[in-house]
Length: 345
Image 1 (spheres, rainbow, N blue to C red):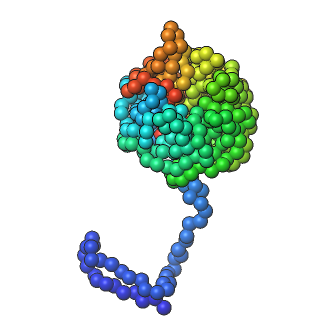
Image 2: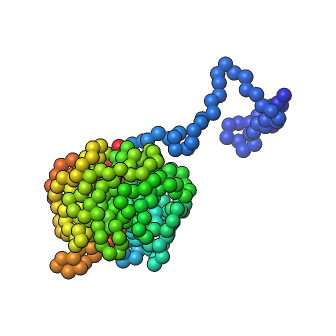
Image 3: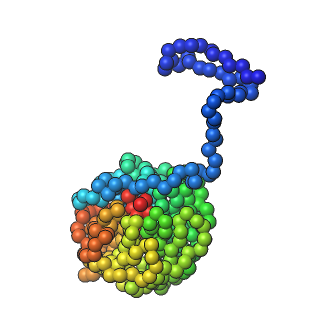
């Protein structure tokens, strides 16, 4: 039988207060005590992203090799502000996000390809923290996510591997399945149910592109399935709300300004949306439930120039991109995520 001993009875908040349970303890009550079951991911159902009026977009790393992280409020316009720093100068990392965390995986860390995964708390500012590791070193992996699970697909050296993490925990990635087409530098976006990967380089660095679009069901594990095709083989930036996925710019094989879209819940080929303000490759996209935002990149006309351009579109309409503001530093091959994107509902 258990012995219940009260060490002292003192006022609330005293550091001397305490109760000691000694031996086997039983609880006798008309109610009952229920221990939660299941794994961590299943115990946390999907929860909505931050409202479009306050959703924050984050742009991280890029070339010229930098560790800078910038942020914007997607519903406004204006220049980006400093957020903090990556663990080192980094480019070509994949990015995913929940309503709370942004996660960056792989890429070039200085001049070395890494498998490191690092994260930030999007609503605050500050430097990244260690999350875990990918199953192998890679760069140019594509990312998409729901509110609980982040998925990283493909990458260079040339692979078709898909793996996932549980965003609100930390740890190494786990095998998910394989892409239909081996590729790196695809554009990744999502609804709360589906992850989408469009285009990419099938033989880096030879610039042999695909127009293939694959999809997965985020909550499962399985190989990707064919969704449809982009208008041309290329490596676009991507973003989405819960209904539409957008693909913008990229190389086909030279830089282009085309924006096109899909309806994520269906399958089929893309439809024309509009144009970026200029031709750009190696840009990156992020979004709220209303706006898609594209930042940075590299233009080849009239001369090769790295840009700090940020521009936006309204996702559920069609039309050309409109100026938003500037990044704190001109760069390309950066990473982007938000706490209000389409995978969060």
